[in-house]
Amino acid sequence: MQKLGIPAPKSWIDLSDPIYQGHLTMTTPANSGTMQLMVENVLQEYGWERGWQILLETSGNLSSISARSSRVSDAIARGIVGAGPIIDNYAFNHQKRFDFVDFSYFDKSIILPAYVAIVAESSKRDTAAKFIAFLLSDEGQEIIYKSDMAKIPLSKEILRNNDELANNTEFILNSNEAYRRSEVVNVLFDQMITHNFPLMRQVWNEIHEAEKQQNRSPERIAATNQARKIASSVLISEKEANSPTLQALFMKEADQREYSDQALAVLYQWRTLEAEKLEQALVLLKETKSP
Image (cartoon, rainbow, N blue to C red; front, side, top):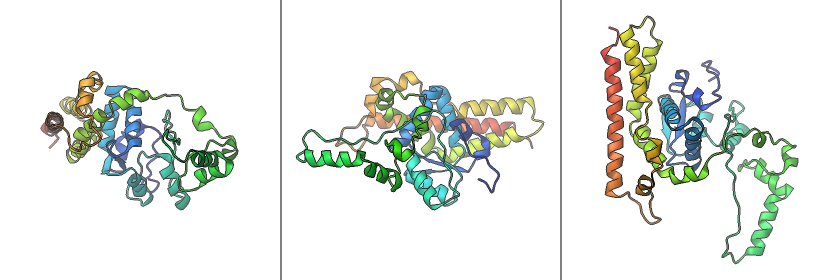
C-alpha cells in the first residue's frame, strides 16, 4: 500500500472506495464467527440497506475471498494484498514478525470477549478454578497478552492503565438480533457475493471505469448511476431477514449437514436473482459505453 501510495483505510466506508479495487481480501461470515459479527456490526451501525450497500461495494474491491479468517492476515503479511478486515490478535501476531504490518480499530468496532467457565457437570471443579485463577493472575494475564494468543488482558498493570479501546467503544451490538438472523445473513452473503464473485468484480470494475471517464454524456451518467444502484442493492428486506419463518428455514440441527429442499430452493433463487441483477447492470454499462 505504501509502494502504491494508497492510504490505510480507517472505516468500512473507506473499504468501499474504488482506490482499493483489487487490493483487499476478506473471509465469508459463514466461515468465520468473528467475520459474521463484523458484518452484523456494519448492518446495525449503518442500517440494513446502507450496510449491505457498503458490503457489496467493498466486495467489488476484493482480489479474493478467503476460506479462513487467518488467511486474511497471512495474505497481507505476504504482500499479496494491501488490507482486509481481521480480528486484532491475528494482526498483532504478524506485527511481532513484520514491521511493515499495520493495524487499527475502526470507529465503533465491536469488542468480542474471550470467555472461560467451569461447566456444571465438571468432575475437576477445584482444578478448573485454580486454572481460571491463574489466567486472571498477573502471570497468566501476561501470557495471554504476550504469547501468540495476543488477547487484550483485563490487567491494567500489564496495559499500563491503557483502557482506551473500551472507553472509546460507543456502539453496542444487539447480540440477540445478530444471533437470531446469523444464518440468514451468512447464506445471503454467500449467494450475493461468494457465489457471484467473478461477475461482481467485473460489474464494479466497469462502474469504477465509467465513473473515472471525463465528459460523460447525461445518458452515460444515468446508466452508470443505475448500474451502481442495482449492484449495491440487497435482495431481501430487514423485515424478511428478521422473520422467524425464514430464520428457522436455515437453522440446522446438530446432526444435520444439508439444508432442506425448501431452503436449497431459496438459496438457488437468491443466487440466480443476484446474477440476473449483475447482468442487468453490465448491460446498462455497455449500452452507453463510449466507442
